[in-house]
Image (cartoon, rainbow, N blue to C red; front, side):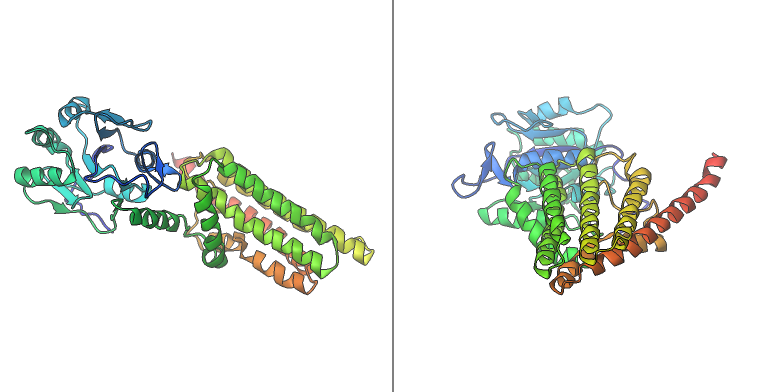
Amino acid sequence: MQLEASRPAMPAAPTLVLVPAVASLDASEVKMRDGEPSVLGLGLTQRTVLAARRAGYGRIFFLAQDRAVPPGATSIADWGRLADALPSQGTPLVIAPATILSETDWLKRLAATPIEPAAWEAIPNRIAVLAAALVPDALAVLQADGGAADMAAVAERFCRRFGPAAAIPQGIDPLVVTKPEDIRAAERRLLRGLIKDTDGFMARHFDRHISLQISRRLAPTAIKPTQVTMLSMAIGLAGAPFFLSAHWVWQTVGALLFLLHSIVDGCDGELARLKFQESRYGGILDFWSDNVVHVAIFGCLAVGWALSASAAWPLWLGAAAIIGTLGSAGIVYWNRLRLKDGGGPLFTSVSATPDDRLSRMMDAAARRDFIYAVPVIALFGKSTWFLVGAAMGAPIFFLLLIALALRERLQSRPATSGA
C-alpha cells in the first residue's frame, strides 16, 4: 500500500500506553502467567513489551497502580504522571488495552502509518493513535474528572475534544482477548504468522502442520530453541547409520528419521519467534546442524554402497556430495551469515539480491522438499539414487554459489569506487 505523500509519517518512535481491560478473564478458565492471560508461553503484557521493542517503539507504559509490569514497561498511576514522563520533544502516542494481542508486524505498520498533525486515528475498543502535537492536550483531557480508565472512556473523551477519529488503514487488525475462546484464536493467529514466504511447497503444506503443533505444545515449557536444534540434529544423526545397510527396511527407517529431523528442525525457529528468543548463536547452530546431518547421511550412504558393492568408487560419490555440501555452506555462511546479527531470521536467502532470477532458482534448490523423496526411494531399496543426485547436484550448486558471489562482488565495485 502506497502512503500518501501529503500525510507525514510518525516522526519518532511512538510511545505505547496500555490501559486496563474492562473485564478480566477468570483464572479458572484460561492459563495465567504472572497474573495475566498467557498465550503460547508468554503473558499478554509481556508479549506486548517484547513485540513493541522489536517493532521499534520507544517507551511502554502501563496505566495501573497496584499491578506488577514486566521488564521493559513502566507503571504509571494516572495520565498526569504520563505527561511528566514523556520526552519533551514529543512523540506519537499509541493507546491500547492491556489484553491486546501484540504482533511485531502490525505494530511496525502502525508506527509507519501517516497521521495528520492535528488528528487522531482509532479502531474502536482496540487502538487509538495520536499525533505528537495533540499529546499534551490529550493527556489533560484524559486526566480530567478522575481520569479515563479504559478504551471506551479514552475514545469518548477524544471524540468530544478532537472530533471523530480517522480510520486506521486496512491490514492493521489486532485481536483483543476478552473471553476464553479468544485465547485459542490468538494461538492460531500467532502460529499462522510463523509460516514463511520462503517455505517450499512440502514445508508449507506438510511440515508446518506438524511442526506448528509441536511448537504449540513446547511454547509453555522451559525448553529453549537451541535444545530443539540439538534434538533435531540428534534425530538426523541417528538416522544416518541405517543407510550403511543395503536392505530396504533399514534404509526406510533411516529415511523416516531423516524426514523427522527435517520436520523437527522447523520447531526451533518457530519457538524462537513465538517467545522472542532469536539469537545469532541459535541461527548459526541451526544452519550448521543441518549441514552436519547431510554430511553424515551422504557419508553413510557412500560407505554402505561401497561395502555392498565391494568397490571403492561409491566413496568418490560420497566425497563429491560432502565437498559440495560443505563448500556451499561455507560460502553462504561467509557471505550472508557471518556479519548478520540475531535480530531476525539469520538465513533468508543464498544471495544479497534474492529477487534476482538466478538467486530465486538457487533459493528454490536450497529448500528441502527433496527429503520427501528419500523415504519413497528407500522403500524400493534405492537410497543410493539420493547419493547419486547429491553427488551431481551439490557440486553444481557450489559452483553456482561461487559464480553468484563473484557477480555480486563485481556489481558492488562501481558503488565502492565512486563513494
